[in-house]
Length: 240
Image (tube, rainbow, N blue to C red; front, side, top):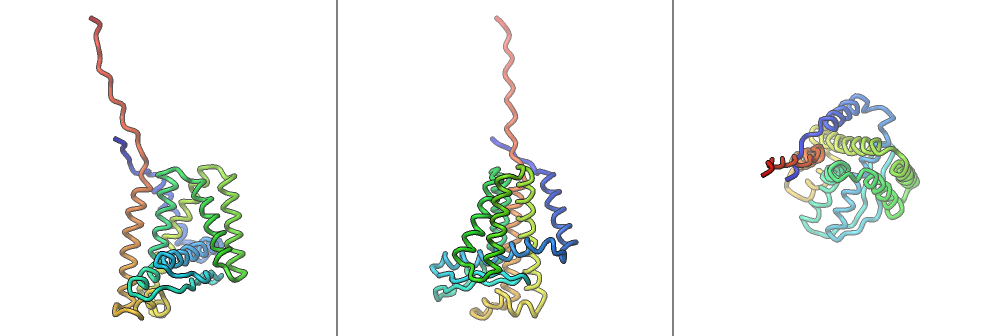
């Protein structure tokens, strides 16, 4: 039976990424990754809309790190809950999928290439403004080149950074939804509060708990390294 143990190097790298990102949060260097996290958030809304039988009309990201997914969704409580929740929860699922497939299934180049395809699809099918088109196509080209030519370990590190930063960005967004009244008034949580009797802060708290659970379980699985079973010692035989 295969065993696994915590990969200390990956855990240290993940913690280091979180600390460095928080310290450099306002640095322009992180802007492309923030916009990438916003696109992941809006993609979560788009996928949820498709899942409930709706239509996605446009997905937009802006330099000020705002974004929107314009879609038509069927009437109904559960459809609205799923679509409005798709942003934050979707970001957590995307981050975990990237971590797990990169490390547990060793799909490092494939996942970076898949990210390039994802951005290209979002640009061609749902991008309607020049900034969204330029950002998605530009990042897609960089990711495709990285998947093709970067050293394998560097690709794995880049995937780890993107996944960790996406999760961190989602956590920062949820923090604003929980504690900043002005932000919460314009958030996905408020959209759900408008069609339910549940206050926005409760929705934000529920999303936080669910996202943390998804990230904790997925991270625990991704940061463990498979170990081959110990060889069974052969029985000693003595000549007759």
